Amino acid sequence: MKTDMRIVLTKQLLRKGLLSLIGKMPLSRISVTALCQASGVNRATFYNHYDSVPMILREIVWEYAEKIETLYMKDIRSSHSEEHALETCLTYLQENKEEIIVLFSNNTESYIKGFGLEVVEDVIRRHRNELRKQLNCSDDELYLFLMTTASGAYGLILTWLTRNMKQTPKEITAILRRLFSIRTIRP
Image 1 (cartoon, one colour):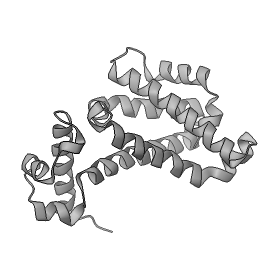
Image 2: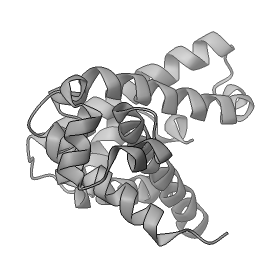
Image 3: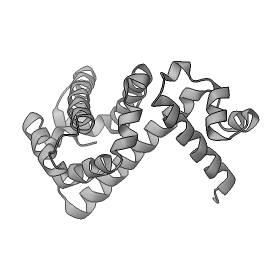
Image 4: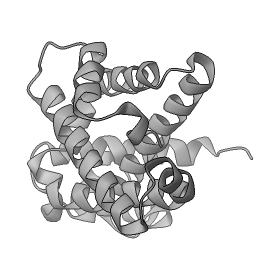
């Protein structure tokens, strides 16, 4: 299916406009009018693609989640190393650090928590049977384990990026390996 370049451009303009505004104010205070002005897109065009401003943020978060999962799975197939695959994902996040920092700023905190939970629940739903066998646990235990693991990894990675720490993706992978068994966080 061919993607209409006007749609791609419109979504890019709205994305850039939203990230610019998030750098200045909480998401809850960003109106459709302000976003359209910052993006150079009219309101009717905005509503052709989105119902609300947070929907754009949700789309961005899901794009990152899907890209990370794709990178991870592709690297697992080629390198057969979970650690190398995780390092590849961390390199991708580091390369997009400026945008990640804006996305996960205090101005989006409550929204990001909700979207992050959505992403983790999606991984659990799609891989429940495999993960339950691997971990030999009930659904509740699996959920609690993965939420704890995801929260810990999220906090570590976000701290690494936002504090501009000097560790390489390889070093962060080693820290994660020490904290969690890499096998248990495989999606």
